[in-house]
Structures are given as C-alpha cells and as structure tokens.
Image: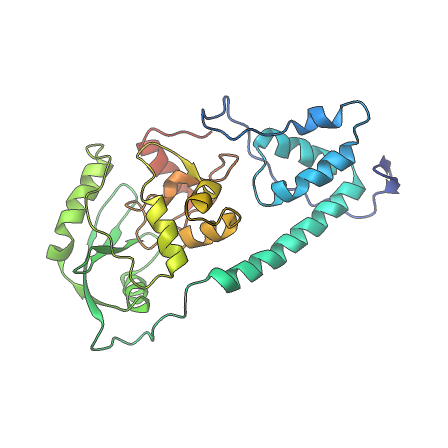
Length: 287
C-alpha cells in the first residue's frame, strides 16, 4: 500500500476510476482555443500540483481541456487519492447537472402517436448510400427527416415523423430532388445542399442549434461550445450536444462537423463510425 502526497498525506484505499484520454493530434487546428499548460503550471516555484489539478477539474468534466492537459490531469489523479476523490465528486455533480439539464432543455412532449386528420403530409422514400440505406422525408415546407436504415426500421422512421406531427406517406417524388443532391454529395460532386428544411416539431432551443449547425461549412469543424455561443447560451455546451443528438436531418444539417473543444469526436446518433466516414469524405481528419 503506497502513501501519496496531496494537500495532506493520504493512503489509497479505493480503486481509481480513470477516464480514457484521446491521443493528441500532431498539430492543433489553426483556430484552436488557447489552453493552460497544467504540467508547467504545477512545476512553477511554489506551485502545488493538487491545486492546479483541482482548478482544472470542472473544465475536464465538461470536455473543455485539450488532450495534453487532460492527459496530465488523468496521470496526476492516478497517483493522488485526494485529487482522485475530488474528481469523483465533480463527476457525480456533473451527472446530477446533466439530469437537470435534460429536464430543462428536452423538447416539449410529443404529439400523440396516432395519425390525426390535421397532421401534415410528409412524403418519404429510401435510397442506398455509402452509409447504408437512408430514409428521407419531405413536407411541403422542405426536408424534415433523415434516418439511418442500418439503425432504424421503416416503422421506427415513420414513428419519428408522427411524433413531430407529420403523416408519413410513401412518395418517391417528394424526395427525388434531395435524393439527387445526397448522391452528388456522397460522390464528391457537391459541397453544399440547396434544399429547404422543415424543423417543425422541435423546441425553439433545438431549432436555434440546428440552424446554427447548418451554417458550418463543408470540410470545416466547429465545437459544441462554438454553437452554444452562437445561439446566445455560452454555458449550454452540454445542452447543445443533447440537441444535436436529436438532429432529425443529419448529413444535411451537418452535426458531424461539430466536435468537442479538445477536437475529439464527441458523439453522433448514427454512430461514431458514420461521423468519421462523413468527415473523411470531406477531407477532414482529427486523429
């Protein structure tokens, strides 16, 4: 049993819960946010590594440290029980705030799943793509839903439309134009979609996030924090991630171009493999 040194000498009695840290990129993106060199700060005369670590923990928990600083922090807490316990407290608080955030920012309750006579018509169909089958739906106002056939059935896709107040009707003509543009995109012949979008049935916050995300250019990256700032909610990084996790029009609304502040991938409803393939298609590599 090893005695460790933090603000006081402590003996480790509990196993360390260690987070994985992605490998740092060879060179940071040109617009990367400036970060603090935690290791250097901890080695300054009179510096206390535990004080440096504790000040950095909130940023680590919400994903705002770069990979170098995240790596130093993880290595430090692996050898310091005091800081390990402090980080565990921050993570438990983060879990509570996450649940509270979902209760505040989740969309309004969905309409009844039954098709009502007043429901808006949404014509839909299926196309093949390098990502597998794609279900596409369009209303009279624009494209309203895209689903990954590898992860959801046609009936589930229809249910998503019904939850948003649409009446799904099989109709290839309704999606012929967007199907053509998607094929051109996957074939490397298009870098911008020119179709109207229908965000009906989502909350105002989610709509604002989707609208901002739709402006991220082909071959570029933005971060969840960037989007939060654009919609006037700079502290709502996690809420932005939740909203993009419910993006009803992936690929065209390019949530695959939104990553964490340390430029790791973050999440993706269709799966990280699809996110990586879309970024690779656009010539973007974050490894």
